[in-house]
Amino acid sequence: MGDERDFRVKVERDGRWFSEYGEVTHPGVKRYFQRILDCDESGYFLDDGKVRVGVDVTSYVFWVEALRKREWRGKPWIWLVINDGTEEPLDPATVRILGDNSVECRIKGGKFPAKFTLSSYWQFVENVVERDGRFFLKIGEELYPLEGGDG
Image: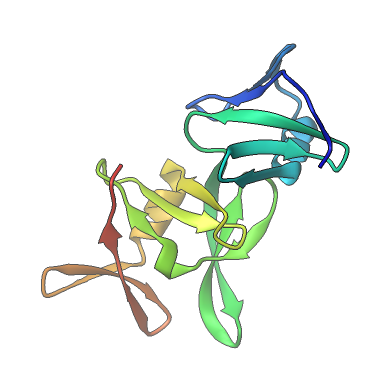
């Protein structure tokens, strides 16, 4: 493991990043931080292979900015546009409806939670159907049950 520093980076509830020098506003630096972000049982940290810096995360680091419909594995699918500039297929099994009716899912192989922005939330809702009082995410002809979570 790399050198452990005693200063920390913080991600505020509104998604703003701060270092010991103040707010991180440069989009390229934020994306770099997101790319080298990792987590384990001790929490979040930045690890570039040489230095490991703890990160205090009060809410979400990743946000789903938009949804795109395109094929995946030969079937119609929903792709997530993430705020770090990446896209990945949605894993319906990781979708949670939170107590305030907002939506989150797991990304990056299930490692991190990502919250849907308001615009992606409305795109998501367009794919929700109700059957016998239960709600499902409809992707192509498949229905995936939606469950609530704590939040």
